[in-house]
Amino acid sequence: MKRSEINSIINNAKMFFSSRQFMLPEWAFWTPGMWKGAYERCSEIIDNRLGWDITDFGSGDFRKQGLTLFTIRNGNLAKRDKLYCEKIMISDEKQVTPSHFHWDKTEDIINRGGGNLVIELWKSTPDDKLSDEDLTVSIDGVLTKVGAGGRVVLKPGQSICLPPRLYHRFYGEQGKGKVLIGEVSMVNDDDSDNRFLDETGRFPAIEEDVEPVHLLVKDYPKYL
Image (cartoon, rainbow, N blue to C red):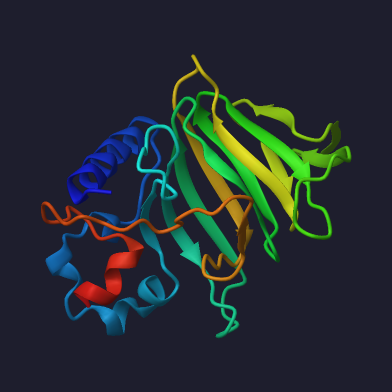
């Protein structure tokens, strides 16, 4: 992805968050220069990868397959500090987050407002393929049966609990507008806890055609 595209996505995200009255922490708006020399007082942010995360999952087409994420809080399993994570995300109409599961993480995915969120679900087989078995999920505490590959549509205010090893693929419903998505979960570990059905690039390579407006989580080592 080009840095200019990432900057544009972040600027649009800030406007959307504001329009939904979802407020980010102050450091979300720091310029790259403000991070220099900040490790000692901001080590939790940096070590636990809090902040902006823009990905096209290696597709080269963010509008078709991509996700805007901002990690607000996250723990560190090695340090045994916080054992939870919170994210806010944006998915546009038909903008796909590809099929994946988490080996250990249980998460609640919440429609915080905007359009409807479509989630497709599959159990995983012992060899980590898609199962053809039906499944049961909890939607706001109500057990709901879903066929293999079935679609759950979350309207604003609704949420679903996704246990480990449950494949999920999601996107904004066409004609309903972009979706503000919350995530509350166990500690997030993008290095070892994600299993994508097809090979993806979780953190895309960046072409530095302009300076960053804000740092991504993958930028911290370079700038600090």
